[in-house]
Image 1 (cartoon, rainbow, N blue to C red):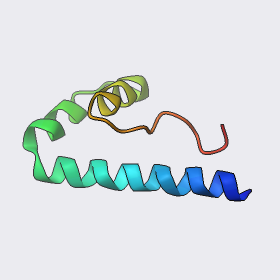
Image 2: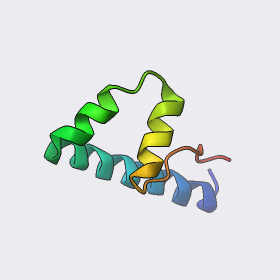
Image 3: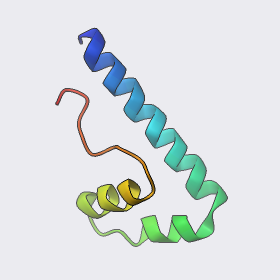
Image 4: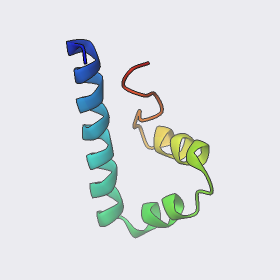
Amino acid sequence: MSDKDLKKFLKKIEQLNLIAQLIKENPQKRRELSNCKNHEEVINLTTKWGFEIGKRWGE
């Protein structure tokens, strides 16, 4: 893994951890995420929340 890819990978983990913390603290956001039916809906919702988790670290 290149240094650039490693940074992207770590950034994605950081974003996912922030989302996990957010839904632990906010029942409404947890319900919104729970209502997602597929990966695309999750990406769209979390993007609205200000997160960027749609790209794979190697892209």
